[in-house]
Image (tube, rainbow, N blue to C red):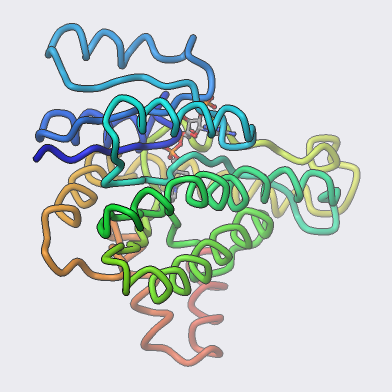
Length: 276
Ligand SMILES: NC(=O)c1ccc[n+]([C@@H]2O[C@H](COP(=O)([O-])OP(=O)(O)OC[C@H]3O[C@@H](n4cnc5c(N)ncnc54)[C@H](OP(=O)(O)O)[C@@H]3O)[C@@H](O)[C@H]2O)c1
């Protein structure tokens, strides 16, 4: 039987590439996009390649949008085998300059958005006694970085949530997998929201922020293409016993390995010398 997949945040980047990859590999794929006006590129590919790929309006911050999307798939396919929680954005700014409402919005999309979609899909997967939930975390799901503490916190939260959910859903035949990409060449950095106070440069962090932004630009030049994340996701879906975490990109692999093998003091020194 062909597998049915739902992916959030497919207008660009990792979600876009993953939707194409899955559809090209026999998955009946539903690509969630927040604004259907941003789905031209996907629509062209669907028409050209005659893909089994359906575009759905899906804003992970909007309860009725989630309900409509999941209900549509239930009606049309009666099942959801794969849920990929990918939608997200980055909030840039040093903590002192971040307003709590900016941080709450960041959590609303990157964390509560994941929870809301997952909550709606689990009952169906439990009924089926099968399913795979893939949560797109980040290398920043295990390592802190200055200037993006709110974003990092959402990804740490995703890691804790996913790891706990894995145990809860295992008895029902549902797998939970975490993907940890490094710097990926997508619209992500362009789409990052810079906190209002940081944009105004009203406090004393503007030089540090500039330095970090410059580092990110440099890292972007050698960034991993999003199709590499899509390939890893497909590979994980095809494996009988998938790993709990998949790291994508040499940068993420290097930093996560260092975090595992070095003491906290050594790791901090390495970060201060090389990254920050
Ligand atoms: N790029 C990286 O270096 C990197 C590294 C590690 C992890 N990640 C993670 O990978 C995921 C995908 O990011 P990307 O790199 O592919 O960036 P991207 O090209 O900016 O894609 C982000 C997607 O999320 C969507 N989105 C944002 N808010 C949404 C909402 N409320 N409801 C539904 N969709 C929403 C965007 O839709 P709109 O077009 O409507 O804005 C877009 O389709 C994110 O979770 C990100 O944290 C990225």
